[in-house]
Amino acid sequence: MKIRLLAHDSKIPNLAIMKISTYHKMRGDDVDWYDPMFDMYDTDIFYESKIFTFSPDYRYYPVGATIIRGGTGIEVKSKLPDAIEQVTDLDYSLYPDCDYSIQFMSRGCIRKCPFCVVPIKEGAIRRSKPFELNHKGKWIMILDNNFFACPAWRENIEIIRSWNQPVTFQQGLDLRIMTDEMAKALSTIKIKGRGIYIAYDNYEDKDMVLKGISILTKFIKPWKINCYVLVGFQKPYITDEDLERVMTLDKVGVNPFAMGYVDFNNPNYQKPQEIKDFCRWVNMKATFKSCTWDEYKKRSIKSN
Image 1 (cartoon, rainbow, N blue to C red):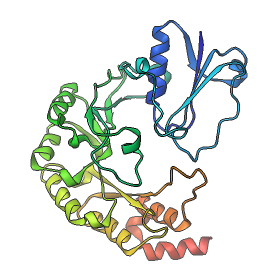
Image 2 (tube, rainbow, N blue to C red; image 1 turned 90 degrees about the horizontal axis):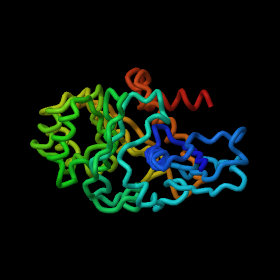
Image 3 (spheres, rainbow, N blue to C red; image 1 turned 180 degrees about the vertical axis):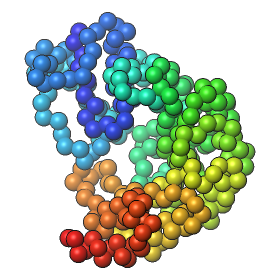
């Protein structure tokens, strides 16, 4: 059978598409990326993955094929068939320039943040079987949504250590449950660059966040730590508390990374301009270090 794939809006190698590819190649099928110039009329099964609801719909579907669409951008609760979901040998040949491995040690989360789709999509925290590493991989991107909330985190740290490759914890470690034991465990594995990610999404969590950072920085250098800062969720503009969060992180040597809220349930949602400007100011370190937020706002108003 001729199987064609489309990772509609993925910014990193698409996990579901790589599983689908492995599954069908194991069955002896002809598997490749979809090209409407050559595959429009003789594709048997077409798989599309869409991550974001706001991404424009694809237009050039194959004629006469079985079309299977999935991903958070199409249906939050969409899942792969069990036979495909159980695949652990991802097809990295789809991404020949990828020099890292994607890895999940657990799925789900203990939190129910109203701005996050993980509780709906993945449910409660649970351990998952690691994937085979990319044979061309030089480092590992760990995508657990709440790594230390998994009861098996100690065993997972041992597995990561056994791989003997630098890692990043891309999704954000939960500072509200951080302990000395957890932070010390992190210091025993290789961290790639600024590979520790944390989050400070709610001003109300200030005391817990700062306590977690103080624990983490006993064992991890602050310059290795990035902190996601959600803005635009509670208010559609920048508040004094938003500014205080990023400045507090900068003061303790942690790199703030502002993220504008996106309403995934509303494909027509547009970020307010002030939210975009704030994120640009924080995330472009040359501007963040060279001018204040008030100064940057004045420049933005003049340029507009």
